[in-house]
Length: 105
Image 1 (spheres, rainbow, N blue to C red):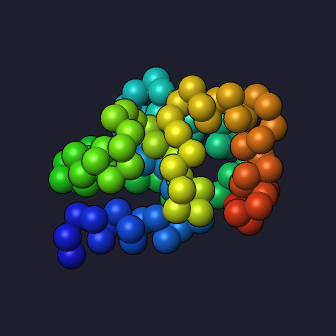
Image 2 (cartoon, rainbow, N blue to C red):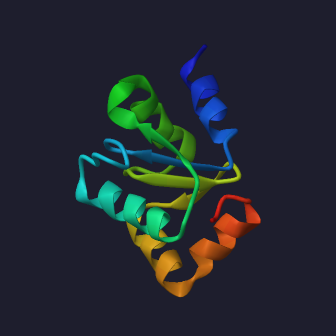
Protein backbone atom coordinates (compact mmCIF):
# COMPACT_ATOMS: atom_id res chain seq x y z
CA UNK A 1 0.00 0.00 0.00
CA UNK A 2 1.46 3.36 -0.94
CA UNK A 3 1.76 6.20 1.56
CA UNK A 4 -1.20 8.23 0.24
CA UNK A 5 -3.41 5.15 0.56
CA UNK A 6 -2.21 4.71 4.16
CA UNK A 7 -3.10 8.34 4.89
CA UNK A 8 -6.55 7.89 3.34
CA UNK A 9 -7.04 4.68 5.33
CA UNK A 10 -6.43 6.59 8.57
CA UNK A 11 -8.72 9.42 7.42
CA UNK A 12 -11.57 6.93 7.07
CA UNK A 13 -11.91 7.24 10.86
CA UNK A 14 -14.20 10.13 11.86
CA UNK A 15 -11.61 11.84 14.09
CA UNK A 16 -7.86 11.38 13.59
CA UNK A 17 -4.95 13.08 15.30
CA UNK A 18 -1.57 12.78 13.62
CA UNK A 19 0.79 13.54 16.46
CA UNK A 20 4.30 13.17 17.81
CA UNK A 21 4.04 10.25 20.21
CA UNK A 22 0.81 8.88 21.64
CA UNK A 23 -1.97 10.41 23.75
CA UNK A 24 -0.54 8.67 26.82
CA UNK A 25 3.07 9.54 25.94
CA UNK A 26 3.14 12.65 23.74
CA UNK A 27 6.60 13.57 22.53
CA UNK A 28 6.05 17.28 22.03
CA UNK A 29 4.19 19.96 23.95
CA UNK A 30 1.89 20.84 21.06
CA UNK A 31 0.78 17.22 20.62
CA UNK A 32 0.25 16.97 24.38
CA UNK A 33 -1.97 20.06 24.37
CA UNK A 34 -4.15 18.82 21.52
CA UNK A 35 -4.50 15.36 23.08
CA UNK A 36 -5.48 17.04 26.38
CA UNK A 37 -8.08 19.22 24.63
CA UNK A 38 -9.57 16.17 22.91
CA UNK A 39 -9.60 14.27 26.20
CA UNK A 40 -11.30 17.21 27.96
CA UNK A 41 -13.88 17.37 25.15
CA UNK A 42 -14.62 13.66 25.63
CA UNK A 43 -13.46 12.80 22.12
CA UNK A 44 -13.12 9.30 20.79
CA UNK A 45 -10.39 9.41 18.16
CA UNK A 46 -7.65 7.54 16.38
CA UNK A 47 -4.15 8.75 17.21
CA UNK A 48 -1.35 8.15 14.71
CA UNK A 49 2.21 8.42 15.98
CA UNK A 50 4.05 10.01 13.06
CA UNK A 51 7.40 8.84 14.43
CA UNK A 52 6.41 5.23 13.64
CA UNK A 53 6.09 5.94 9.90
CA UNK A 54 8.64 8.47 8.58
CA UNK A 55 7.31 8.13 5.02
CA UNK A 56 3.79 9.03 6.19
CA UNK A 57 5.17 11.89 8.30
CA UNK A 58 6.83 13.45 5.26
CA UNK A 59 3.99 12.85 2.80
CA UNK A 60 1.21 14.08 5.11
CA UNK A 61 2.74 17.57 5.06
CA UNK A 62 2.32 17.61 1.27
CA UNK A 63 -1.08 15.91 1.36
CA UNK A 64 -2.51 18.42 3.84
CA UNK A 65 -0.45 21.42 2.74
CA UNK A 66 0.15 21.93 6.47
CA UNK A 67 3.80 22.04 7.56
CA UNK A 68 3.61 21.12 11.24
CA UNK A 69 2.33 18.51 13.68
CA UNK A 70 -0.01 17.75 15.31
CA UNK A 71 -2.73 17.72 12.65
CA UNK A 72 -6.35 17.06 13.61
CA UNK A 73 -8.85 15.77 11.05
CA UNK A 74 -12.61 15.47 11.47
CA UNK A 75 -14.56 13.58 8.83
CA UNK A 76 -11.49 13.55 6.57
CA UNK A 77 -11.05 17.34 6.66
CA UNK A 78 -8.05 19.05 8.22
CA UNK A 79 -9.14 21.11 11.23
CA UNK A 80 -5.66 22.42 11.98
CA UNK A 81 -2.84 22.29 14.44
CA UNK A 82 -2.40 23.13 18.08
CA UNK A 83 -3.39 26.81 18.13
CA UNK A 84 -6.52 26.26 16.04
CA UNK A 85 -7.63 23.21 18.04
CA UNK A 86 -7.11 25.01 21.35
CA UNK A 87 -9.09 28.03 20.11
CA UNK A 88 -11.89 25.71 18.98
CA UNK A 89 -11.84 23.94 22.34
CA UNK A 90 -12.00 27.21 24.30
CA UNK A 91 -14.89 28.52 22.18
CA UNK A 92 -16.86 25.26 22.45
CA UNK A 93 -16.71 24.70 18.69
CA UNK A 94 -14.53 21.59 19.06
CA UNK A 95 -17.23 19.86 21.11
CA UNK A 96 -19.79 20.80 18.45
CA UNK A 97 -17.59 19.40 15.67
CA UNK A 98 -16.99 16.19 17.58
CA UNK A 99 -20.69 15.76 18.34
CA UNK A 100 -21.52 16.26 14.66
CA UNK A 101 -18.97 13.56 13.83
CA UNK A 102 -20.52 11.30 16.47
CA UNK A 103 -17.29 11.13 18.42
CA UNK A 104 -17.94 13.10 21.60
CA UNK A 105 -18.87 11.55 24.91
